Image (cartoon, rainbow, N blue to C red; front, side, top):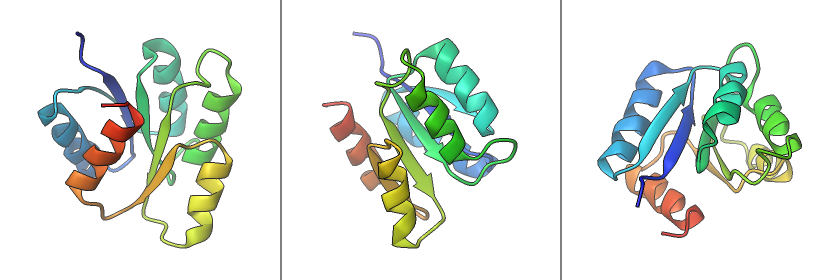
Length: 123
């Protein structure tokens, strides 16, 4: 069985690399994006099994990218896990209201991240 593919979108290189290492260690294939525009393009081209999406990114923020993905009939079923430094509870409500499957606040526990991803992917 082929490895599940996860698109990790975060403008912070160290966060992107950390998440990538955690997921690759769990056997996932990781694709990365550095902003919302690239996230939508790569989601379209790569059709990942899941997107881990930061909210505060340049060019197009994560909420706009989330909207574009969920509005595209070919991408709408891809689960999106929002990860953000925004700690106010309203942001979790906004993320889920826009169609995100879950919301994680930075800093996060690698075990929690993996656990949420496995749950979303039915593993």
